[in-house]
Length: 154
Image 1 (cartoon, rainbow, N blue to C red):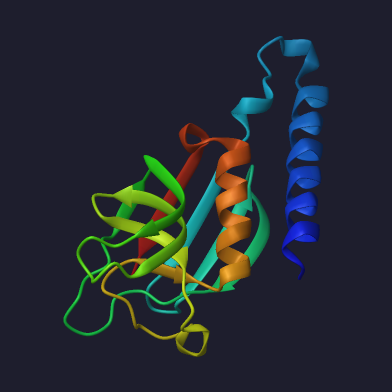
Image 2 (image 1 turned 90 degrees about the vertical axis):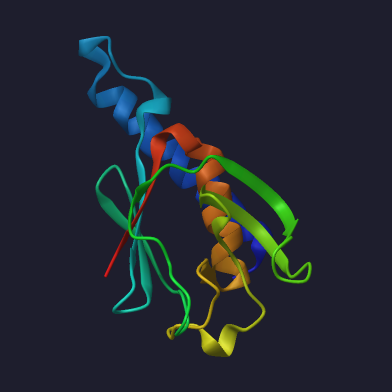
């Protein structure tokens, strides 16, 4: 999908979800658009990421997690840093487009090794197709890191 169109669809979907939350909770006085929750569930066994917005499935993408000899951390994390473009200090300045860091030097980011998606292939990060990584990055920007969880399980 064209990146510009994809970004517009994400922004429209996010605005619609936030608007619905405000509409249905208007009587309680407690609703805020920033309360919308974004959850990315990464399955190491299936090499997939399922993204939900306020508990509703929204996206499913193939990923690559840690190859043999490396580890992708398991657990529930909040993103703490984002970079549209980052270069790995540990791995020879390897490019990490649309990086969403969630635990130390571990991030969800784009890869150019798209033929390896769906199989373990990384040094521990969660790799996505470049278009999916751009979409995920924009979702985290839209909902905010405080309203985002990245959950990694076996």
